Image 1 (spheres, rainbow, N blue to C red):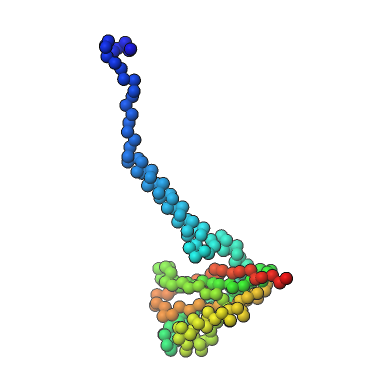
Image 2: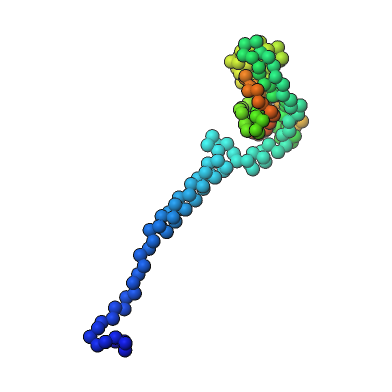
Length: 193
C-alpha cells in the first residue's frame, strides 16, 4: 500500500501498454516488400539474364582479348526494300587459345541518344554490295544466318585470326545519329587431344 493512497483503495500495478501502431507495421511491411523486389530485380537483370546470359563482369572477362577491326557503317539502296543500314567489320582473337561462335550486337541510336533498334548476330558471314542491293530481307537474313558459312569461318578461330560480321537494319528511321557494336558472346574451342 502506498502512503498517498487512501485506505481501501487498490492500486493497479500494471502500466498502460501503448497499442503498436498499425501505421508503423504497414510501413515496415512495405519496406521489406520493396527490398525483396529490388533484390529480385538485381538477380534477374544484373546477376542472371532471363535468357541465361552471363553478367557484365563475366562477359568482360570472357571477351577481354577479342578486338574489333575495320568497323564501319553505310547505307545501301536495296531495290526491293529501300534503304538498308549496314554495320560490318571483323573480330580478332587475341587469346592464345582458339575461340569459336563469336557473336556481336549492334544498336542504332537517335538524336536523343536512345536506342532505336538493336540486333545480335553470330559472326562469320558478310554480303557483297551487289547482294545488299538486290536480295530481299528474307534472303539476306538467310545468308547471314547460314550455319555452314558460320561454322566454316567461326569455329576454331586461332590466335591472331579474324572473323567477319555484318548486321543489317532495314528501312532505318531518318533520325539515326550514331551506332554502336559490342562483342556479346564467345566460346572456347575444344582442345585437340
